[in-house]
Length: 347
Image (tube, rainbow, N blue to C red; front, side, top):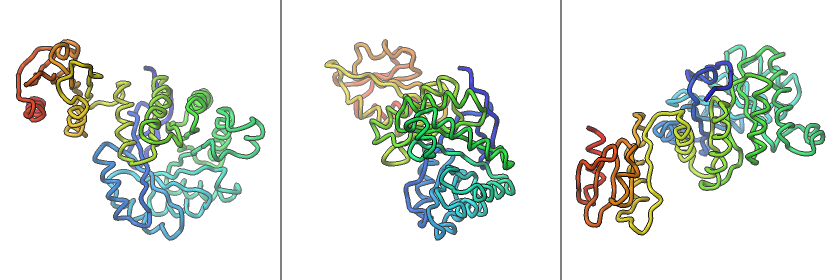
């Protein structure tokens, strides 16, 4: 797929935009005032593939803790700022790799200028985060609500405003909880400016519904070649956000790693396909080698249907099969299946 032409920005060593791979982000849901707990969550995110993490900075009392988090985090930390422009300035001062602001929430132009000038002084990138829930009142009135046109006009206006002040290292997001509004907003913005784009569907919901909305929204844009970094928004564990983000990228051939495929099961199923597939995914989490592993429910159709997999397993009445490229290479006891599969993978 042809990629939308954007310029490159460096966020704490992670390159966003240009021809760089699409990076995956998440956001901590721990209290920023507790750096130990927040860093523990960041470590878990890093282990499953998170490349950039966002941390909210809601009050001045958290600036010191935020600085400790920035210093000890294994990945770049973005400061999430709302309303108080002084927090954005302080976040930049203590080493935030990027700050996320909605210029409409920061206040008067002189306050925004102070933030931008501080960012310029330390070469700190900015994400202009346009959200359907916090659009300027005049745009809501003009368009009759948070339409994709309103999102785009707000984003273009604010990017140009920041550029006029003198800063051009700006990443942009245009998020709505409505999937089609989100898709249309990014598509339209991509026609007008070439800033790197942070993809996401905001307030997407809990795991199942949220995963589907994100997969459709983010996946559609990536298939268009639009998008340089992403965050899957889910109500729940941010670790799940990373896993879903990785699966979205892998499904479009945009990220390497283990691809576990499994059959939908039928009355011929002789093993617990769901449980086995989950075990395989968990055991191989974080492996970046390109391999397709099949978990099939029966020995009747399994090896044949999944012959394009590099390696796979198929259930039998009393025993199970391990096959490579459709050819059975080993018959094993069901209780030994997962260990034998891992042994073959290591070889």
